[in-house]
Length: 370
Image 1: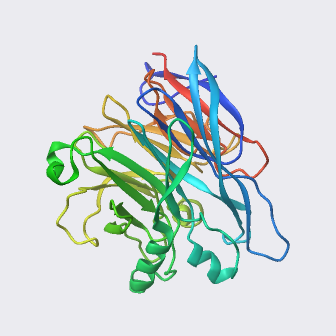
Image 2: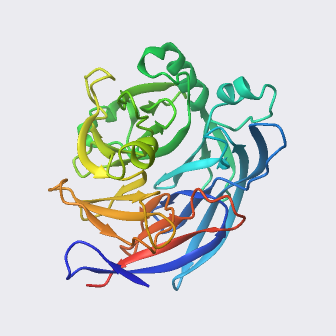
Image 3: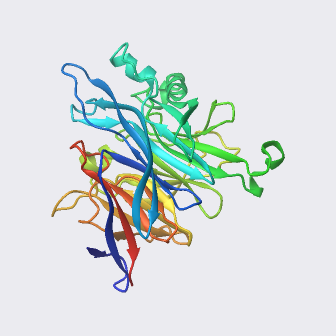
């Protein structure tokens, strides 16, 4: 299957790579060409409860041999069913995944304090936590309780948004420290920094080596919309770029085109209230984002309207011209989630990310053909 966008000379081939996944959200490749997938899990509603929990969330590692994906390991995590958003079914679990060298990090959605406010006593020990995964075995080590820290921060800043306190960490990014970061001496050679976006607290924060959370930027709202930042990626300039879902504004108030991409200097001296600067606009319900090795920004539009079938699209924006948005894959990219560039140069996209039907998710490969 193929679709075209932007220039008539540009065409794309979209090929299925994986199927049978449950709520695939984040994607990442390590330096050896292995693919990691965060699966939110399966929908197991409990009568009379807003929240219910299972152990069907997963982080999977796949290797590629002659183009065929082979499962190497799968690590189970808490998965939370939620009917908070207007009573509709939602599954939250492992959401963001990132790899740098042999370091693999995964973030699990929501926060225990937020869940317990609605469903006291529900056993969700992994919800909202950041985990380091052994790249060879998949063994998970708890790094930080991001969710509860962000929930507390939002509670201390209730004046910023009418729905605070709230927390729902969805994206994680681990990057190698660059010379411009200016702290190699403190961190040592080969050191990394870790950043998390929280779709509930509307923040970009850095997870420090001791597990504490440092808020860098608040992604602003207006009176009718919740910006809902969902993804973070590093640009060619070393800055961080954050995409927003803006679900209510895009689908219910103004129509498509209400999502933004914000540029944030990770070493900023600005206040968290002013650190986020709009870099690109006119997108629709951004969920995943990544820069390719040529410097193009890619974003998945989870609920971009498609009159002929399931919603979803993919866009590409050249770094030198953020006003130029190329649409790729409408009609062939159902409800996409995370995105990552593979070692072959193709972009890999999770599809069926929010679907609650069992085994309805997958991963597709997007290759330029002309």
